[in-house]
Amino acid sequence: MRHLDLAPVARMQGSLRLPGSKSISNRTLLLCALARGTTEVADLLDADDVDIMLAALRALGVAVEQRPGTRDFVVCGCGGAFPVKRAKLFLGNAGTAFRPLTAVLALGGGAYELAGVPRMHERPIGDLVDALRTLGADIRYLGHEGFPPLSIGPGSLHCGARVAIRGGISSQFVSALLMALPLSGGGMTVDLVGELVSRPYVDMTLSLMARFGVEVLWEGASHLRVPAVSGYCSPRRIRVEGDASSASYFLAAGAIGGGPVRVEGVGSDSIQGDVCFADTLAAMGAEVSRGADWIEVKGGAALRAIDADFKRMPDVAMTAAMVALFARGTSTLRGIASWRVKETDRIAAMATELAKLGAGVATGPDWLSITPPAAFSAATIDTYDDHRMAMCFALAALGGVPVRINDPECVRKTFPDYFSVFRSLAR
Image (tube, rainbow, N blue to C red):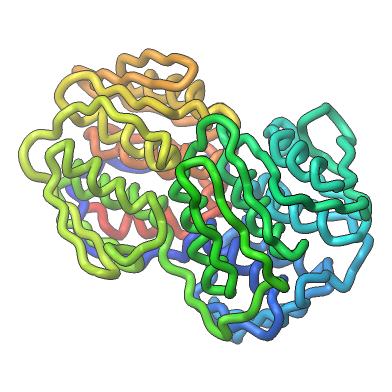
């Protein structure tokens, strides 16, 4: 499908069960594969990035079976050593597969090549590679220095007591290193150099590692202690909670479009930092209520502009930018430098597409300001092969104008049924 036309929407109301979290799905699959024992995984996300991880694990010799008619899987762990010691893996544009597999395979004693789509080859990975090389990993760049594709050799590991890594570009580098270190026996301190973006994603990683028997502890704000362990142990069964990033679009729809809109699958018990987006909506004037496994939002009085730092949850900052279109005054989103190395340069892309709707937009290295339009303009939105661009700009239909979304099928990356669910709530 080349494009999708959305008619103007007057109100959004209803409830939905969220698909599984992409970040939790791929972390869980990798930990299951590395663990001793067999693990049943319930409610795995059905989307491209997870399919990429599943294909990679199978290519590495991991036995994975899907329960018929469900999103439940059984993964037979390999006890920390993949059976296949030589492979070429194509990982698309799935950062949640490429980064952790780089770390795990670098400590795995085999010979591998990792590649992806052209955009993946533009997304930096040097901070992770530098850290792994200090441990003796043999990693070579097959293209431009600091970027995929990569060649990984057996290496000559000499894991010491400490390893340093920069976390200012992507928290995935830190998560990837942490997940790999227990394969070397652990007993190591990870020193974070400079500022860490998206710390809640690292905390999510630690929570999942703990489910597999490895308790990593923060020592202050810049150090993480990985215990001396003999690898991961299966928890036997684990469920993937709903995707909090995907929830943001529907919670925003409730705030903009009256609501109430309830999402089920994430709530006050979630391990995902993006659930805090509900607090952003409350700060803008929406009515928010929560339970252990659900969040509900209603539009109250007129929405207020915000000036806020989104370094801890940059993905949902895109949704906040859309809500800003419906708020009184100019909103400024800060701490979003990581947008520039995502599926596209999201600061540039958001600025271009928001302007099509009539918004006033200003940008900087790590910030974006949005002034709502006096009247919305009908627009054709380009999505840059970025699922989040497609999903968040659907909210523009609440501006009372028709919106055309180009390449809507890019949502397959994380939420294949997004537009049908969105339309089911439209009134």
